[in-house]
Each structure stands twice: as structure tokens, then as C-alpha cells.
Image (cartoon, rainbow, N blue to C red):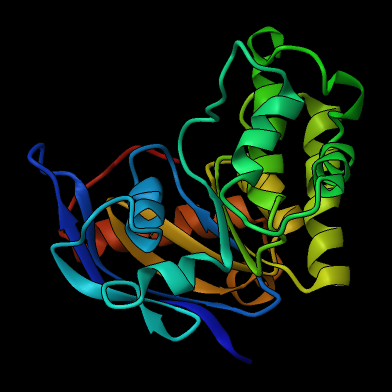
Length: 249
């Protein structure tokens, strides 16, 4: 199956000593790929480097076969991303925020704004100012922005933040529907292992800036919950680093 995103030997070290090291991962067309791990494990750093929002110390990122250092704009035209903050102009309505974003995509039909508002469940709030939106509604608006140009790959950083149970289920259903019926590929970071187990077809487990294991849900779990599989991988990683941890987890 075609590789939509390839990350090879990716390294980034910040002044505080954190970052990522020797990360290799592959997102294939049609995947709902979950990059999972606790806060601070390096998930957002990987997404930033994969979308050109940060510069790696070494390694390479290929989007649709293009090295983003050489063909960044052509590759990113096929990508929608929401990394870290769900930003919007709070003095503008949800509709007007999307209308402004639509200017980035010449030829986009005005009706597309209404389509994505309906998709993310914001149609009835479209004319309200974004400043009055809840955090969950702002997450939905940011997701609508990523969907505007109907990208082939969508990259989402903790998209369920601020969503209630109903909103989380609706988000899951939207992602599954887009993957199944439109062939959209997803790379999603999250620390919510239970939700990722329900949603994703493939998972990359991160710990301490490293990708400790990657595979399908079936390959990783083998009859146990993803949470148990992840904790097992953490123990192995600690043993390999010579770190003694006598706490039971």
C-alpha cells in the first residue's frame, strides 16, 4: 500500500534536553494512524516536524514521496493539519473564520463552507462569534478549517481535547466515515489510549522522545488492551536504557 507519509531517522533536540530521537514511522494511504503516548513523549514534536512547523536536526520527512525540504508547497497542498492550538479570530463568526481560511484555496466553492460546518456539527452556530464558542466548539471549527480543501492526509494533534462524550463519539464517526468513504488518511496524536484503540487501524507508541513500537491494533495488543500493551513497551524501553523503576504500573 502506498506510503503517504514517511519519517526516517528524525531527530530534534531542544535546549531543555527534550525532543525526539531516531523516529521512523510510515503512514499508508487509508490509515487512521494513532501516535500515542503521554504528554511530553514527543508526539507534537513529530507532527510539527512532519508539517514544516519545526526544523529537524537530522532525518527526513516525505509527503506523498516528496521531501518537504525540497518540495514543501506541492506536498502540503494535499495536507490539512491542526497542531497544538485551535486558533480562530474570536471577533469573527465561525462562518467568517472559514470564509477567511477559504481564501487560501483559489477556486473553492462558497458552498464548501456550509458543507464542512455541517460535517463538524457547527452549522447551527455558524453565525455566532467564535469568542463565544466553548473549547470543544473551537476544536470543531479548527477541524472544519482542515477539511475545507478536502485534503488527502489530515494531521490532528489531540483533536478530542475539550470535547464531551457526545462530541468525542461524533468526531470518531466523522473520521471513520471520511476514511471509509472518501479514502482520507489520518495521522492523529493522542494520550487517550482507549479512544485510539476504538478509532485507529495502526498505532505508533511513543515514550521519552522515541517511537518504541509501531503496528496494527491486532499486532500490538494480541488479546490485551492497548493500555496494557503500551505499559509493557514502556517497561522494555526502561530496561534497555538501564533505568530501574520499581513502581508497579
